[in-house]
Amino acid sequence: MEVALSLAIGILTASGLWLLFRPRTFQVILGLSLLSYAVNLFIIAAGRLRTDAPPIVGKGPADAAAYADPLPQALVLTAIVISFATTALLLVVLMASRGLTGTDHVDGEDGEA
Image (cartoon, rainbow, N blue to C red):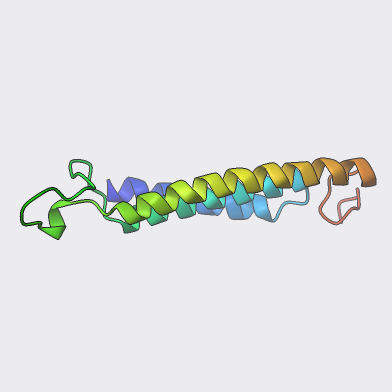
């Protein structure tokens, strides 16, 4: 499980960085989205990977190792909402920039240098 998660985080990070350095604005937005997914997976992994543990401590004495940490789950849920809103804003800015300049290149020039 740890190897698969590490590979997923690494592939998402590498793909996001590769897209981030592309000359078109839509590719940059996709790269930022992939990087945010990689960070969300990393935060979830930092909160201990447990599939059979409840996040809420019940009555009686509690052993901290038997429960999942709910804080990373709450942080990732908040990050998902924020990244969705940021992506929507970036897409609106992309469409306005495309309408004003007539190109979707990051530097505003159409030619490949």
